[in-house]
Length: 292
Image (cartoon, rainbow, N blue to C red; front, side, top):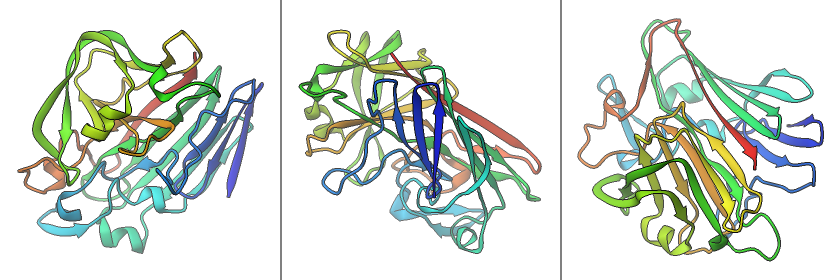
């Protein structure tokens, strides 16, 4: 099922499959969300839960028992229920089921609220623990933005401009998609990363943590329109486009958690930025995307 949202001249659409926002258009009808294709990436804007990234050999240990789970978890390939809906917002809800309990032995309630705001949209993750034991999870977004946004432009015409000047190293994924010990100095006392497919062909993903910035702007080098993502609630942010594909999109990804780290224990409880919710506890995390 597809929920249609409207606020003034802005529109959006959200699918119950994966609970993800799959369209956002401005007052001029410009589409910002990547439409997906079989050549470079069929995804659009998946919700990452209860893990982010690849697990070591596709497995994770929870309380001494091993479970298998796909990259980025199961939420993105699971049907959500519509919990609430208004003209400019919808709340998608996912709860444990016999299928999820085979891969993830926790009772949980995941709500994803997509809302149109002035000049953009917000996505809020709300996780509640209805069980009798601590709930462990990671959560994040993988928002594909069309890049370029207009005819006649190129991917390389765009820049990622952070709110603050940064001196930061990117975590470098291994060939298996794990976080390796290697680091690359991606922000050398600057606020800007010039987009270049060659960088993603080599690194696959730019992964940053501990930034001073609370947001980043994707914009044309000549001051053209783009988007600003506010990600300050998340300790990590990543940027990805399919390597060796010259794909016309860039994913802006706020993360609370990351892929397996080479040499890790494999225990979910030991993963970087894993969240632990006590019984009855709730956790909310939000990011926003606005047109600039």
